[in-house]
Image 1 (cartoon, rainbow, N blue to C red):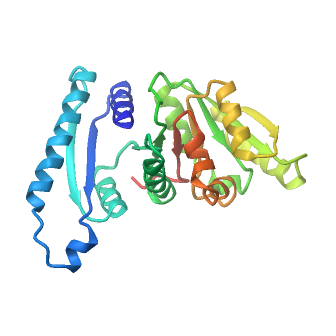
Image 2 (cartoon, one colour; image 1 turned 180 degrees about the vertical axis):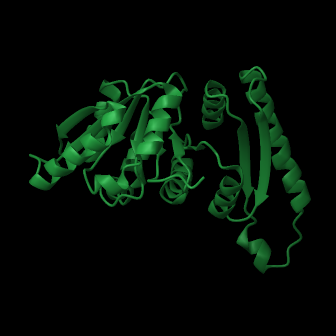
Length: 261
C-alpha cells in the first residue's frame, strides 16, 4: 500500500496516469490435480480489494490522477512485462520489502528480478518511504565501460522531469587505478551537459558506503544500472537482507542503457 501511495503521489506530480496491477498466479497443484477451483470467485475478491485501493488513492489525489486496475492471470514477471510493453509506462513501482521477515524475502525477490530484467525503469519503494519533491538524484557508478553503459538520455529526462540535480558517487577500495581514472574522465565528458557533482569515496563495504552517502546528503532517488557487470550485479549476488535494495531508505530506480519505446 505504501508503494501504491508513493506511485499515486508521483503520478500527480508529473501529470501521469496510474495503473494498479495484480497478477494472479494459479497454484501448480490446481493444474496437476483435478480440484474444483472457483477462479471467478477468487477474481471477484481480488477486484474488490483493488477497488478499495483505487478508492483510497482517488481520495488521496483528490481525483486528479486517472487510476485504472488490471487483473492478469499467469506468471508474475511474464504478465508484468507483457503489460509494460502494451502501456509503455514511465516507470514500474514495486515495494522493496514487506513488514515481516517472510514478506521481505517475497517482495525482495520479485522486485530485484524485475529491476534486473524489465526493460522499463523500475522503482523500488522502501516500506516507509514517502514521496516528496525529488531534488537530488544520485547515480551509483562503478566506472566500467561508461560509454556503453550510461543511459545519458534517460538521466537527462529524469533530471528535467523533476528539475533535480545529479550526484555521481563512486565507492572504491583504496586508491583509483589508471583504468578507473580513464573511465572517470570519459564519464565526466559524457555527462557534461547534465552538470553533475562527483564524489569519490574509499570504502570497505560498497553498499554501506553508498547508503551512508545517500542519507548524509539527503538524496531523494538512487540510480542503479542493472545490466552492468560490476556494482549492481555484485550487490544482487549477496544476501537479500544485506543488499542495497532492502537497506536503502530512499527509493532506488533501475535504468537501462536505452529506451525501447
